[in-house]
Length: 420
View 1 (spheres, rainbow, N blue to C red):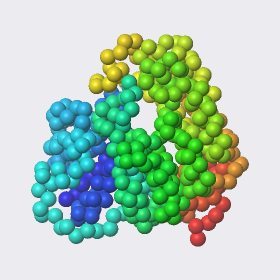
View 2: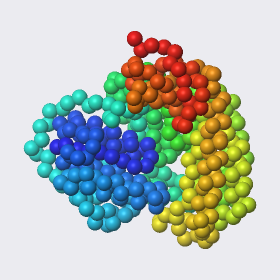
View 3: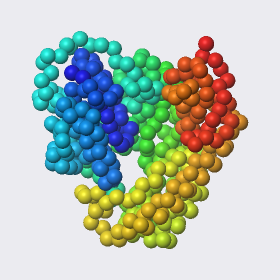
View 4: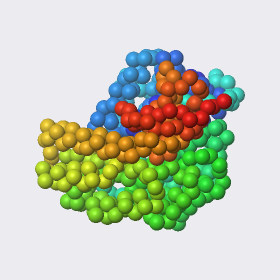
């Protein structure tokens, strides 16, 4: 069977799609990079905001328009929360919620005839040319942030065994990946149900592997303990932390049921930056949360501007059915949310530019990903997007670059070492 896989939303969704691609290939099926020639399309959806839900449905419709003959399997968070609506979309043959996705291929085999397929395993190429492997270490969340639908869609916290994660990472290392990214809904809670910690997992990974870079995806501020920070003494740990802030106003944070104050968050950033030189801290900020007045927004904007974030993802608040916030008073008008979003995005642009300027003139190692017309793009370990022009084959190489000037995505530089 020829299968096209696609996802929307978080790195966890991406890691799941990559895992399914490997399983399908090992079973003798062909994974395609576009839907036109597929027998089956698998769409891993997102529902974190109403916009994400709409985009998920647009993605399903695009698959059907590209190939009306293909059956479509829909899974992920929007499939969990809105299965009836997705079942009615054209081409959709099967809708699987988040619990069923852990047995996705078995569920597909029950619905589709796979008996005629040649089951000779073939080598799995690097999925869509990625140089970073996204490794799922846990799923679900036991927190109770009032705005969050993901914990409802994904269920309770549950962690994969350390041995299974290390085994997967060793397999990705043998395939040539240079960087592993540990993903999940709440990775800081990894292993708590078994008396283990995220630090235990990382120490085991570092002790049993040799790949150059290990990166964490989003981690909650309260999970960034001194024991965890000490692991950055190992140079393989990428100097990048994504610490969701959500708001820079204490009153708003209380209504969100976040477990810190702005003062605690500020102190944590200062402590982390002491431990990790040249650390990039990226974050999420919600604008227009319930009850956010002009004074609260001004406080939030001033705090965000003062924190020196390397990148800020800005989200206008979206009330999701099934969350505590869905029934709370104090809706902010859409026009006000739009204005505040634009202001926060301007802070985000200024903050990113200021962070990038600090590295002009420096030499840093870059993991190169892809090129268009000999214009290569890659990432430093502290998450700076770098571009160079080169006719050499740089893909999946880590090479030193002198950083010269700002670019739209980050920085432009010049390559200092030949690949020959």
